[in-house]
Length: 181
Image (cartoon, rainbow, N blue to C red; front, side):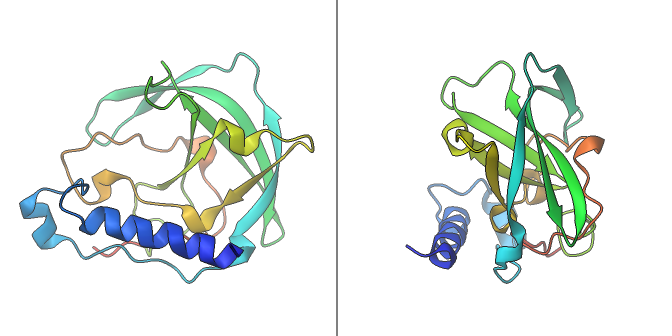
C-alpha cells in the first residue's frame, strides 16, 4: 500500500468512526451541531523522520485537562526533527499508570501555529505504539497527517489532556484534522 493510501485509509476510518452511531463519541444533541471531520490536503512534508531519544526514568507530569481535572503521563522520549528548516522538539508520553487495555500506547500531544485558526485551539494529538518506535537507527517517523482533535473539541463530556507548553511548535502544521467551529 502506498504512503498516500495509508493516510487516506486512516482519514476515512476516522470519518467513519465519528459518523457510525455505534462508535461515535458524540451524543444525539452534539451530532446535530457536528460539522464533520475535515482534513488538510495530505502533504508528505509533514511525515518526518525524527531523532528518537529515550528518557530513562522520566518524570510523571500532571496534565491539566479540558474538564479542569488532572491526568498523569510519564515522559517516554524526546523527538527532534526539522520542519520548514526549523528544528523542533517534542516529548512523547505514556499514561501513568499504564492503561491495561493499551499497554503499548504512546501519546504525542502538541500545539502549533494553526491552533485556534484552522485547527482546534486546545491542540491536537498523534497516537504511537511502542513497536512503531523500536528500530536500530535511532529514528522514529512522526506523521502529522495523522494528527487528530481530542474528543473535547466536539463534546463537553470528555476530559482531554491539554498539551504541555514544551510541546508547542513554532511553525504551522498544515496536516491532519482541521476544525470547523
